[in-house]
Length: 443
Ligand code: PMP
Image (cartoon, rainbow, N blue to C red; front, side):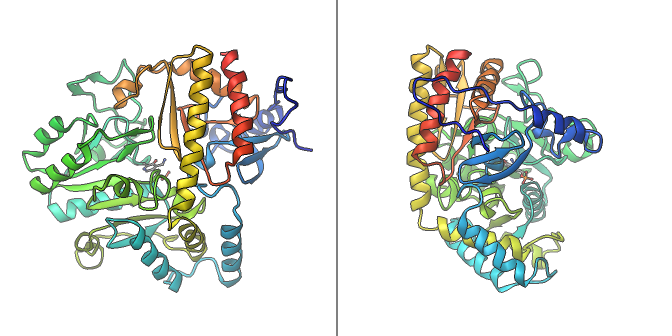
């Protein structure tokens, strides 16, 4: 029997136990470093969890808890866990084959729909993960410009590979002066040569970017067009337009990394919402509602360098029919925008509910972002504008809040992000807000 988070009104929610998960993780450490297959799943309080099943907005863990899930697999499950149309499409495809090492009609038709939805997409290539399509986009930009330098922004995450894992999680001690940002590798063992040409600037600051681009030696500017790995921060009015204009003027390729925002904040991503079209954009996560599929898309002239410009892009799993079946079902569900609008409206309601609960408890916090992905920052009375502002958050207290929520069977990311899906209906939101009101009293 599963223990869920709905309980008699008036009674405090009984605390969940995670002892089985804790034991299984300890066991798994014998064969799997840290007991997990991604560093971003380590060090989560009170223990990384072990799951058995997922459905709709819920995860079911090894201890028999039913958790309302705001991780959503780190973002991909925009239609919720195990949605019927995706399940059906994947099951049907399984009958016909998993991987062909060749093309499929589905590949062309998903590409067609993708290009209808995403403003910058004249052409695209499929791949299996966000990290790889970022590398593909950077390679295209360097090939197109014959320049080496890449500009990225403090706190923006573009995958775990050497060239871009730079200044992703700086702290007040390591970040350096706001005028002269430190360039910080994100990992031990990172090849210095691989990020020697990666420079870091402050996001939402057009003046510093224009100054840097003026020497006309920057191949690409890459950014999360709404900053969602840290915070959920929209660009200041006019910033993206200014970046677009400066890149065009100085011959720099503009890359929007929409791995989180794509097929989540709008059918065509932030570029559609803000009306600013990059040269290239990267997608992953929501594209396959949990199956590993990603894409780099953009101007035909750039994308064709893969075919005729000597730019190599490969991958055994690229455009696997199984993943395309999931992408086809997902994009069909999202294309007309209604589903994402509804997710957004419910998300806004949840944001307001959380804000009210925190306010009533006297906790200073800023709740910002989109209904479909928002961010709760303890200790900030004003919305953050960039990573520097987020460095002032009260992280220890937020982590305690997450733990208090988890013990009430609501699972949220310790970095402050909340992902919503079409399956997060009113019941899940009510259960969540009740847990929030209790948890905030505890911290
Ligand atoms: N870019 C962004 C903006 C991301 O959020 C992520 C993953 N969180 C990546 C790239 C890397 O994607 P993946 O984990 O699929 O390699």
